[in-house]
Image 1: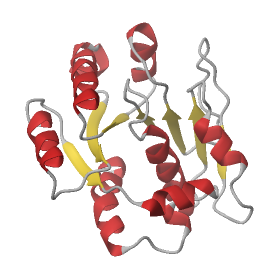
Image 2: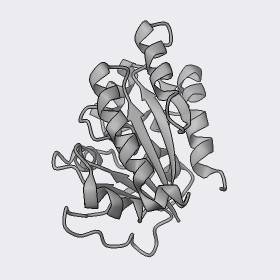
Image 3: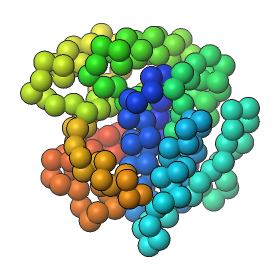
Length: 208
């Protein structure tokens, strides 16, 4: 079973967008995918409720703040969409339940500052130190032509964590999410989008 957590302590970093796209991609290949939405806003769960019939099925896995039951027995892929402000015992508990952590970071000063403390907290956890959990960073809403994107790359260079890929800012994501879909549900993504997603997908499925 693959167990993937999408996490960043700052709200609005793109966690839910990443989580539902990953769930959709795995579901396309007949994996039994469960999506757990731990955020009080329940963005992923609400998105799932409006998902059109006939698309690759993604199952909802109900969790709450106090309990973290194991994934259902038939689960092949479990994806955790986590809340803003994740830290302390809750963070450590979740890290003990997953194999990979995807951290979306936007090229803004506030996002980078919040992420710095989060990376430091991750580095201190036993699961990460012992390499039981692998962490990858994804730049979100990144325009490679801007100074902000270059600053993001420079900022991430100070950490011993891989920048897996950068995802561009596009209205195609907004339109798809609004209709309960993802780019992976609409035939094939545009070549530019496919090129950006492929490194992350490869990283998630490769053997350690």
